Amino acid sequence: MLLFHCAILAMLTIVQALRDGDSDESSVVDDTMLQGGINRSEQPVSRSNGAHICNNGIHYYLEHAKNCSSHRGGGRYEMLGCELLEYQRGVKLGQLRDTQVHWYGGEPTQNMEEFREGSPRTDCRFGPNDGSSHGVFPIPDYCSRAMVSELSTVYDGSTRYTSLLAGAKALASTANSFCGWNDMKRGFVGIFAKPMDALFSKEPTSKACWNFVDDWKSLYCMKYKACRCPDDVTDENCHFNNSLVQCCRDKFEEFRKSQYAIPPRNHISALTGHASRY
Picture 1 (cartoon, rainbow, N blue to C red):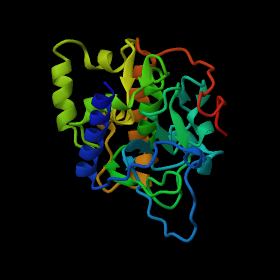
Picture 2: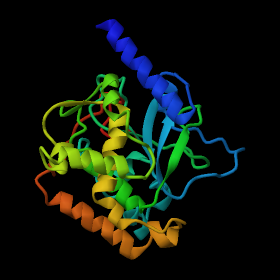
Picture 3: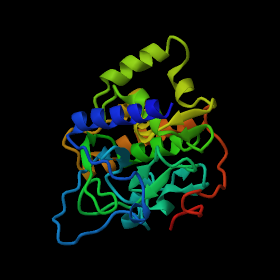
Picture 4: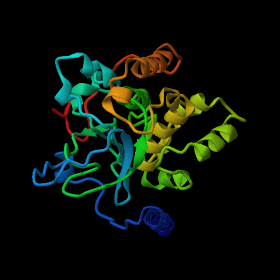
């Protein structure tokens, strides 16, 4: 069995390297990474203006375009989705400095989504290392955070629990905004159950970081891409565009009134020892 596990891990690493041109096999999480991204002021600003999926070695994670802490005290804070809940902690996403969202496949005690501030100057920085972005998802940050909020209802360490080997189920998925494979997969799943039922099933299911970002992308493909911004994403035509942000609010309200929503909890992160990291 151990040899089988090692073979699967090797296969995951090789496929990821071929897909992304990055064979860094550094540990998934260490103390430096838990401290968040590093602001290296000597670097020029090169941040994307849209949410994106990142990878650093075999670890995949989400990164929003905007951080909440820079927009406190005004209407733009709400328009970025910073008032939305992380349901396991029962706190608002804006309290978590949530520019990056992580689900570590190799951390068996993880019991909720984890958040990192990232870098204000470059995409995907995780700990001391530069990660790689897989292209912009052209939606307002409100939509991007709404999807994270929705997934936090099931990513709780028991309904969704960590497993590096579970990543094999996402081998055929892509990390860009193209929905072809997700639509095909959703059509197959729909033969047996409603796709949303499968995504928010209460059946305990193992998930690696790859599965987490693929679930986030599935929400984009299933409903939030209806709030799509123009391809040349700007603050005015996307993140702070009243009609598109309202589209995101409406989509999240559908979830909030659905059978999948849960009451906010007040759990403590098994990785940080706090309900809120900051």
